Structures are given as C-alpha cells and as structure tokens.
Length: 111
Image (cartoon, rainbow, N blue to C red; front, side, top):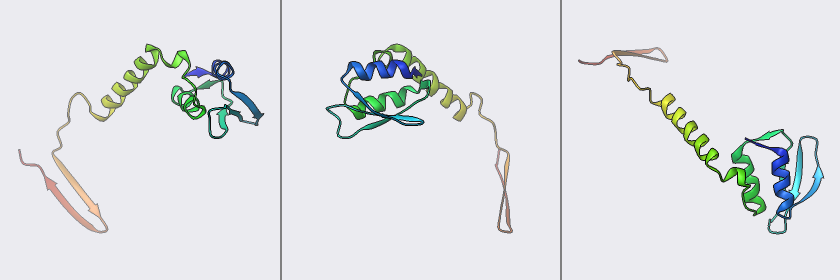
C-alpha cells in the first residue's frame, strides 16, 4: 500500500492537476492523458490501484512502486495463493457421493 499523500505529491511533480474534489474521490488530469482519472480519497491506496492511476495519466510510476518491496509483497502474495490452492500434503479421496435433483450416485475410488 502507498499513502494518498505520496501519490498526490507524485502526481503534482509529474505535471498533473487536480480538477475537483469529490466526497470520496478526486479527479485528476494530465496533459498526456486522454481523459480525467478518478483517485480514491483513502489514506492508503493499493499498489495496483496507484500503478493503474499513473498508467491512465500516462506518467511514470512513483519510486515506491518500483522498489523490491513491491516485488517481495507480490511474491509473498503469490506464494500464499499457491499454498491455499495446493496444500503441501495432498489428501486422499476415498469416495464421493453425488446428489442432484433426486439422482444419487456413489462413486468409490479403487485402491
């Protein structure tokens, strides 16, 4: 996550200007962008959201988003997702019962 203040400083430093304040989002624009971009007014903004905002405004990513911390966080997240989807010890399935609209079928796995 990156702070909203860091992102706003980066936008200003790269020639973007604030168009208007909304209740929950601000609207920013830059000379290179095709249209204005909404930026959420949360204290912390996810890295992916900040990267998307910079891409839409056609400016470089903030230095905080280019560092190894982002890569380390992404790797850790990917590792966690893999661990959740593929447990270390596979569990053996002995039998499965299917029941659908009154149809029942028992399927047993041969050893």
